[in-house]
Image (cartoon, rainbow, N blue to C red; front, side, top):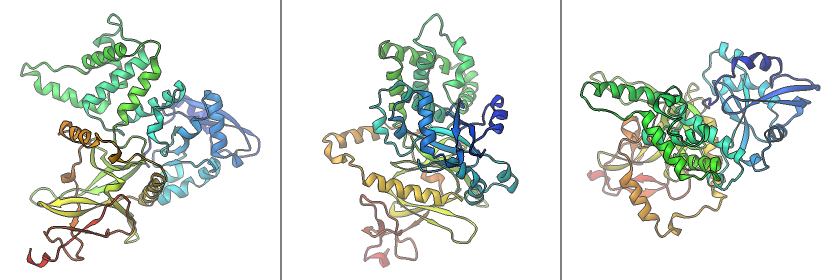
Length: 450
């Protein structure tokens, strides 16, 4: 998985080396667990090699004074720049650390030198299996703060790509949470400017600077991020009473990021084929992040910070293959069209983590089938809401699928080639098919006449 935490602060490095999670022995040892913002939580543990993730989790809750609901909301993760693993409660972090180099060799393309030098750190992070619908029912400010901090980190780092308008709204809420109520005297564009990248993703700030330079000679004045942030900051202060305070602002922030299809995901690294370009039909591969949560799968362009493909489990079938003893491939199958003809599309995602992705997809589907989720048909206004959202969707939104930026295999399942015919529905190409009615395209009896 793609790493979410940054390297520990240099002041802590020596302490981490002296008493890291990979230390052993029956005596009491210091273990450091990090929050998403790199805040260290030192724990004293007896018999580390026999200590479970659940027991360490309990100790973190005691230090942070969090309620028991935090046992469900959060998990312990082992992370490094090359791999991220969410630990099960019964896992022994010490033992997993001892196997870390084997995990890197199996699930990453790390060089041998990197494998030997890499050491994971423990991080306290959101449990990917905790339903986001339950987050807004939480009233404990400490839990909500941690959820907010993690969501904000993922937005600022580009792991949760957002449109500019949404980033500005989220930035205004962050201002409220971190600087207190808006004050016209204290909070001005000049005071906000040095802190801008604490509220708006740095890659987005750089892009807007480029846009400003392009218009500078045309006499068009562009509204700066500082001014927009101050406006949303002011509005957020006016909309929330002092009695409600941070709890409401945290919930408003979470409510907004819940709209992103990849909220609460586990992230994996991979590559997809680029479409052929130019006279020589040059192609290549594009690095992507594959984000998987309880709702579905999203493929995100790591460089451009936008969605290439986002599918719910009801819209796809999948499989994992290891065809030539060299590359693992996660296959995603979904509906599409080829020059107006309905076809099945197959997307190849090259990744040594394909096995992990396939297993997580299968587990998420099993969990969702065991959960009583409201059917869309039970809401009489649902079709109208969906229609309005489609009409209002920003055409250049980072959330829009970009199928043209992907190289896919298009087919109707006659076993040989694409036939441009009126489709019929039948069984999927894959044996691993999600529920809710997805099926592959089949040629009609008139296929030979096309």
